[in-house]
Length: 202
Length: 308
Image 1: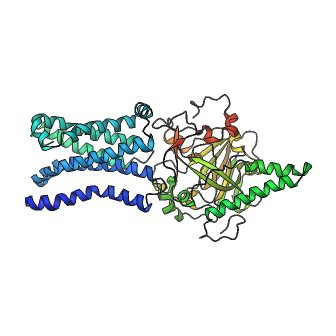
Image 2: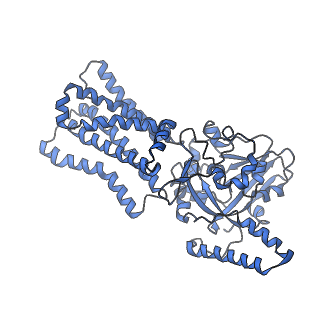
Image 3: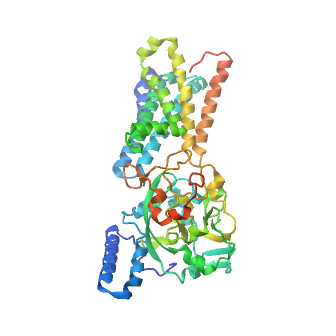
């Protein structure tokens, strides 16, 4: 499968951009119209986290999808989706630091060490930072083969993200279970290909 | 169908907060004038009436809309909005409560009969959820002690055990095995007899809506919200400590007592702060949810980290 480069760049990419921005627009509109429910702060915090994780999983779906559909262009969407993951994760973290902790750093510090789910969320975010920094074409060229190795950090990031979500849920683990299964499938597929010695597409 | 003597208010009428507040102010002033106007021994009953009033907080009640749309009632689903969306599927009239176990007057009681002799009063209580949010709710109800005295528990009765109605046809959440159904809660006898512990039949001057636990629910303001069991269908007096549903679900996270305690964290999250619904930043959680003066003596000498 293949689209004309102009169609891909001028139509598909902008549409995807708007779709990935939709949760942000949803939240801003909800704040404006007061439709985020009785606990809007928590709703915002959770929605941002949800979308960081969902977009990260979708990003990881690109490579297998590319092979399945034989649609090479899909690789060109990874940067945008990866950066949207980072964007939602950053806002999620900012909301936590502000609304939950009031920017009290000593309280954040003890929270990280007292609550494993916070530690895992923070760690997942730390893994994403170098990926965002090295996402430019220049950095890619500069790092060469090391870029691919570095970007394997996305795997621990998604694992830590899913565990972070799983541990904060009180009882209904349906949603984190779905993400865990998807993660398992995506990583197993890569591992399986790696073992067969195929060239890794990350 | 009204469950208790109801003011002439239609089902669609929601008391405006200002009117509501003014009415309370008026009642307070009237009570005050009464005390000033009366002298001698005659003021005694009036006085005890006004101490009773002090069980209520002066804090601003959470809006009717938030109280009735942001609920944890897993019998109708695990999302906060599920109960307000689906709870109407439950039929609450007629309603009976089975009372059994270690008491002299067991039986299946029609709700009307249980409510006939009681005076419904207002109690404005803080409610602190184990998840870290809180509300202020103007409950209507009567003390659990009132009901307990009437059914005459015997000397073997050390605990009171409660069950929510089991009706999976009407309660969609009961069709999944999220928790063991029916939902079970329990109190030690002295906690059950405490004057702060009430059975509620309404809030904001109206009958309870189903999502808030109609037609009869428990309210124990110094314990995490899940102790305040909803839509009660059975009350039993037992010699042994009841095994409540959340303790059964995860015994290392939820105990029998579940007293609000900022110093004992949930294994996965802190309990030191809470977000009052309608507020922006979190506020400090108070020991026994701010009712330490009234209830701390119930737990004198107990290790609250062990008996959480």
